[in-house]
Image (cartoon, rainbow, N blue to C red):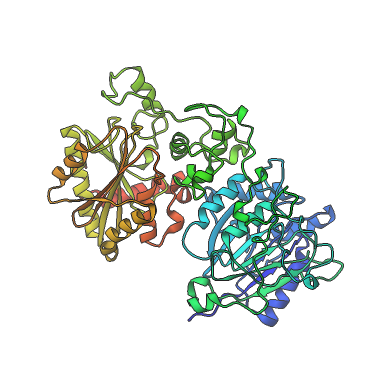
Length: 607
């Protein structure tokens, strides 16, 4: 087995980088080598006189000895430094493993989860604030994004936050608690709720000005324990510990017995002992039952642009982003299908809730509702005003200003082929009818013929590369522009495709209907005959000829990106389950499209 990764942890640097990195170099020389340094608490200076030495490192005049990651994106010069880093082309989109500030220095922005030398690291950057700022504070968007990420399988090894979770000293031996930290109200309730859900093996925090290594505590609903370590600021006058070394074996590499091991001083979870907020009667509740408006969305919905039924309640980020919410009927927020579809069309979630977005020019999402019109029949040429408006707003109509034409790889008389936006794999392709039609199962005969040619040509092209193809489609009852997704997979994965789709269906509580594809055209026709305007439909064609389909009921929590999520799991690419995590620059997309065209040229029926 490979050696466990070796990492250093650090409290608030507060711009004192010469002192920090001198100590890191010393420790690295005497006890290293270490793989990385993780910094919590305020990273930027708190005094102007420290700025010059700080900038020596940021601007490359002084060298940073080991890869360093920080979440405390506040202090003097933070907006200027981080604003420049965020504008770099390599930092665009969702980059959870750190935005490069300079050599060996990475900013963990917002919230995220990534692998660091095999360790699963989750983080919440910034600190809690009532004011919305571009840098230095986390948003509810960041919290709910993190909740979505931690639902993926696997144990989080390290969770980084700047502030302490409220109540973390609950149930701990008072002799070990630093002076002044006995008050159970000290800390951030958002973080206590998150850490109770995430159940990391190590929770690292700063910002309190003290060092504290709490006894490990047992988790509710998990076999492993959590260790909370708080670190003091760099160069503190009390000479409290500000740097700490860890060498944990990643949970993914540990045996069940190793994970279950509990030291003799293990306590109950401090969050299972949390007192009911505002009860005044000492009643005890588990953290998952505590409800506080401060832990959820605080948007002024009166200023939000209304759509749908115009309800005044707020949207659930988890449902909008993934199509499901673990809180179910207990969720205080609205599980809105229209908001979900708007989000899938690229509309900013903050804009949906507030009617505006305060992120400024850095926000990569749309700040207007993307309606696609009601009429679904008739050619684009001469189909009337409704079709004209629709083609202007639709991402896939060839006359639309929103069309990203550089992704198009082949155009026929009735269908065209384009690379997917935010592709799951490099040659992830869409087959799209030119006419704005709601699905590919009810195409006119001439259009179906075009689609069939492209389908067979893509299969032949990928076969030559040693790959098989999975085709799937989400047929929405709201009638968006049809697109058939085409994902090539390694031949070695083919035997597992049906099994993993059926397992995923079982997890969501349904069973696929199975259709044997002895005749492709007849199988599609049979599916089309069973379409119901009042239901959505998901179907997937598995290599070998089987088609799995599921009619989605009105109130069913079905993930809109189900097909992609399952294939991402099959290929061990869980971070790519959401296309927005895979966005590329326009130049990268254009280069990828040209490369695909070269490979596809001899197979392209429209060449």
